[in-house]
Image 1 (cartoon, rainbow, N blue to C red):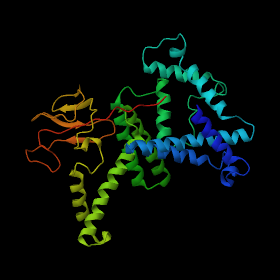
Image 2: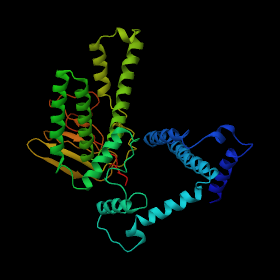
Image 3: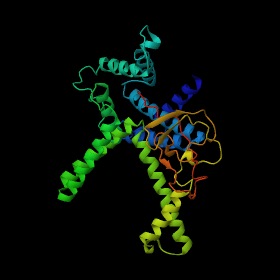
Image 4: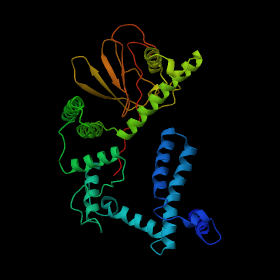
Length: 347
């Protein structure tokens, strides 16, 4: 732990007299938003796949832990050692199936035990609701997902995804009615209900809604950039292009394999984890088929599958109904589908 001790000593010197004036005057509250910002930067680093960037951002997150711990030490509240020992004790307490004699059947039982033990911990037993421990400061999508997950563990949930899809349709109809009526309060409420239902649908699909929306944002930015580049190539101000011209460029960008930044679109053969596809055959239900990891595989047979789901949070790749080749598809009867490891939901 010499490296960690060195890091602690460096930061304590920054806060000490003769150190850094900016570091010395910070408080828990003044840097509270930094932890949120660094967490988002860490997520960006993970998404980028750049290990050097990931290592750097992990260090920045660790800095926030050390910063608050050093402030607390200066105020006589607690030290970084207290933080470390508290975390170690928590992990041991919440994993009796590892550090004790308790036995569990699966990961779901582990999560149920985790929540039960969490409720019994000091300072949490007074909570009147299972939902009381969900921070109000969480981003709304994440907060909605946590609310739904906790309610589900108590047995308050839909039986399957069909009920959630029906609820999404119901909320969309109610939003349409509210917009026709023109009442801003009703419209706001119905948009909230629709978003909440979509988050619930994402949960049933095993998709993180935040990641899915970020992915769509990246796709939109990539394709919109194509419109900007084409306008620049033509020497036409973007504002003077017609909607039809923009839409044609958009559709062309949509057919390009790399336009969405999806691992499924990679053509370098380096993506090597493709455990699952879902195939829907005409007149048949949803069939799950496990496949061995391989650089690329054929997922559609002629006249067979109408679509392939290329993994959690990914779009459907649809085969053309006609025999004509579509730009970006290697063959109308075969579509390469690449999956990423399934979403890992933390405890």
